Length: 192
Image (cartoon, rainbow, N blue to C red):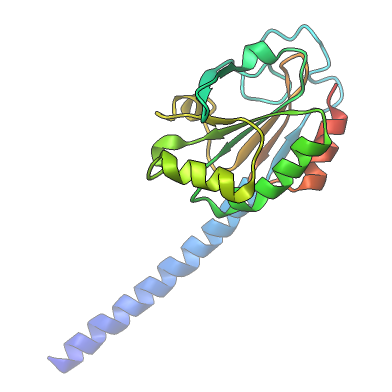
């Protein structure tokens, strides 16, 4: 009986080691995928009359309307003529927490509109969002995606995900994963 138990434990440990090894290599691949950035290349998105709506760089960003934490309605289409950073995030997400101070600095130093879309249905409650905003002293609009409808339409995976949208509403850059201040400024300067 003891030998059978020890054999089962050893086989279980071996199985776990194989699983852990294969999932960690997949995890590394996912991390590389999450940190991918997509930019406009020469000729792509340079047409100011781009009418094709899509999620790819060079296409017009899909319109949406959400309510802010302060009960103000904001829609992307009303921001035509402005450079916009759309950022999908949640309070429980460590990379989101890491990039928030850089986003606030970026907002203070550049002429950019930031739409920080909180995945509200993933939160414990609005109190968590309010506490987060207070903790990081955020002054840009926090939009609430209460049913994750906008996150779903933007096919958000992973978070944070950021879209840099030019003054014509065209996506100029897409980042999967956190951005730092220098990356934000670089992408901002490349937009029209």
